Image (cartoon, rainbow, N blue to C red; front, top):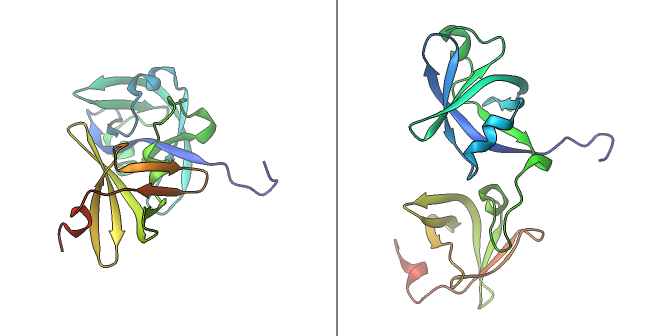
Length: 177
């Protein structure tokens, strides 16, 4: 790592609200590996202003599709409220290894999208997951376009080059006009 380089982090959850009266928080999962929390001893919490603090995990458990986190030194509701809205992060080098042809959402965000005719369409702003159907949200001129994240449409994805080549079916790019 370069001497002045900042380590890279990835989000695995986002704190939604406090839970109980002992300082626990309830977080929405942003990982396909929710059992990873039981092995974590610490995480990093990123605030809306970009400030990041280290937090030691005392306890964690699953609750109705979310994760409950208890951090060391956070022992009441008032203390826990300060963390609502924070992203729960880990260093990027701790990311789980994915099978070939699968990608983390954070790797897709920021990729430029081009069609097979050479038209630059825009940049991936978000990945929506709706009932097993992933959609790339791409800003195309003055509107958002949803592009199904399937092999038949996204024919080449290069995370290294931050580029996605798509072969959209006729009419896809006209939806919402």
